[in-house]
Image (cartoon, rainbow, N blue to C red; front, top):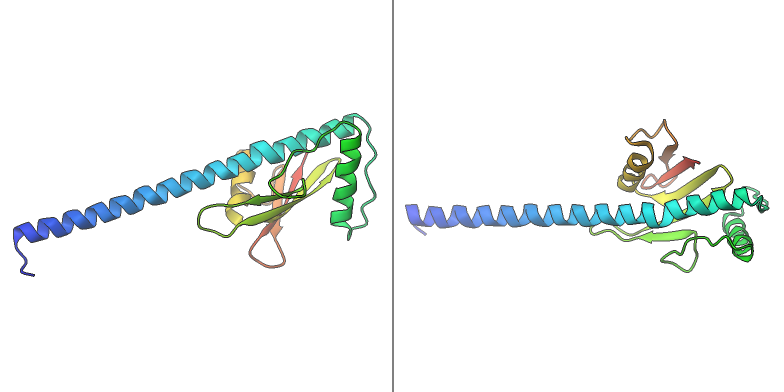
Length: 165
């Protein structure tokens, strides 16, 4: 191919369109992932917050937590709450305290909630989701201060978040 003015113009315009399409796709993916994280916060975490506050206001009995019975504890809490007309929010999994966050790009996150009268502990959230939730709750990201704090999990890939109610 001989480099003439017309060929260079075609090549540069093609490259410009490719870059533009890439930027639009990247921006679209970011917007979709942001909306998924927002829905997770508004439609799941906030509803758990309301359910816990309602359960505490009713003077509901909290099951015994031994430190190693996470699933049994949450199963007992959910069934006790449901029997006493405090409905925990619905999840997109079989268990109402596990939420699968499927974003475009990164692998799906299975977020496990452990609820207590004064706090919610979130297991298995990515660093991006942790930052987004921290910003929603505290207004700015700081993993060591505010009502939502956390630390990296044992696997080094996920975070454990602590939300003080």
